[in-house]
Image 1 (cartoon, rainbow, N blue to C red):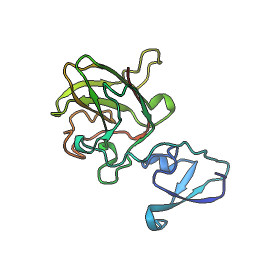
Image 2: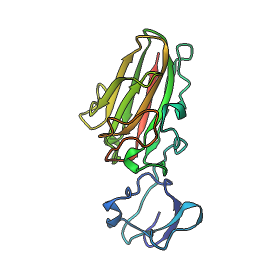
Image 3: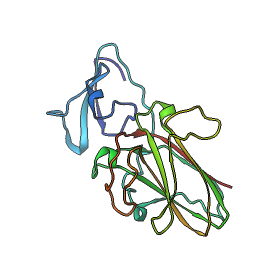
Length: 206
């Protein structure tokens, strides 16, 4: 993307673009929200002189997975061990406030199975301060992590969970913004956080 050029993009084509807050007034880019809205949720973006942006890809397929019933299936289970990884975005569900967005992921554990869950956002330069909550099939919180990076990672705002299942069940991971500690896992947009942005998620079951 070059300076003094205009581009068309949808809301989440480029995860490195300033998030929709005061950063839109930065010297990097101008977005025309008042009269630049085009059909199909496209906006006109002008890169200002002396600036350039390189796209960072992320998976925007996890948009409407804000509750346990809508959870995205990771495919992980006691009979299907392995690693699930993806790079979604908190704040891409236009049905809720940006900081209220939650991404849910489901996996099956047998009693005694251990899963590790690692989310990286802060260390990647994302504006998201991530929070992890883990629920059982009844929606009861069984684990929580905030500002607790994985072993071997430098101190950051990122989060990590190592969980051993006390009983065989389907478990649901909720990824959200820090501050969104009390959302109802069955109700979309029921909580409120203060950050949004892209993140990398890795779940390991072996």
